[in-house]
Length: 499
Figure 1 (cartoon, helix red, strand yellow):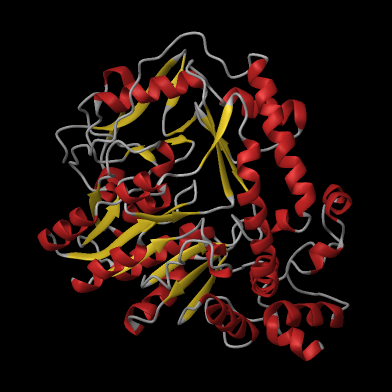
Figure 2: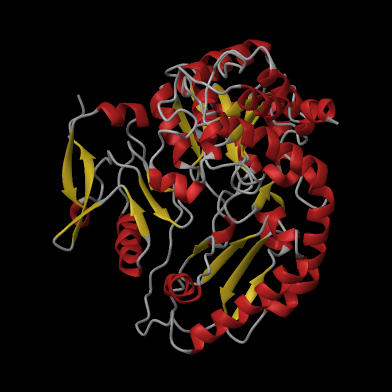
């Protein structure tokens, strides 16, 4: 039985044996398996967790150049996920994005990237020096359908530019997944590699009722978070290669050795190893039960104030989406009045101890996982209680806004003057946002939720973007990339003329 466990959890099992065999440590870390750890943390966490907070000692493997159990664990993960190669990541999916951009796209070379990408992609452009060709979204789609792709536009841009890599996000935060197979076909017809940020879709491998996993759909590289939908610790992620290019795979090895910590805690690596094996063994059964329960329950979650959104076929086809994650539940207000459901999110947390994924002005998102499938009856009761609670809160006036706002969101592609890298190194000054129209931004402005960039460094600031910043700031959204002083908002802009 122990040999079988070692095969299924090669790294985690080896570390357990190692810790049990060692009694005295004259090596790092300084807390010495918890003996020197802060008393407060030992009381909260227990002492045993510190026993596994070790890195690259005599019997453990080296993350940058794995040769033993860690290599076997990554090979096992590749087998489970259908990859030719898999790398364990301890700096989140972000480091996988940076490694791929740095390995494949040289400074000055072009990458086709969606305008509504994660901010980690833009940081990767600064790091790599790649020149972005931005793919604009399909207009007039609901907010939950952000990240949409016009396939004809992809083809046109690949024919017009000498692009080295196409990078798309699928699924988006709301679980809406692109037709990756169609995008992959176009990319490969033009001999261009496709990289998919699948951070929110790691669980797609484990049940046929999820959208098709990006590797199976033909992507060349895929990054996935282990903590968003599976049982891994925060910071843990996977990077996969389909084996299209051994040359680039070797470059990825070198990039990750530069970008990842040289002292990765075994806690993170064990977490990846064990969590992936757990979902491999139990995921199909547990997710099957959860999906079946949710499909039967959705209608019961509709209330007099809120409806559960099922993305209609028209929206999916217009945005070239292939489907949606049934474990994401979107509640949308059906009120004709102005609402702000951020206030309901706050009330749920403060008064009921309920945390949800996100809240926008007129909608809320819940994320369910394999953990919610362990006790389906309890999950069902909790969801019904949740629907009744938000209905009551709204009836009591929480989330209602008296003044109507005529703001209309925009998704126009701005004018780009500088690459993100050039903007990063350019001379900057601080400017009041109300007077920043047409100036070149030095800041990346992201509004949460869902967190994709509203303004990107190197682009001229659009009037509609300024309007949205003031609108969302007044509503209580979290805005990264601006500062506030005495009630006014400021942004960093590029000094012109640019030298």
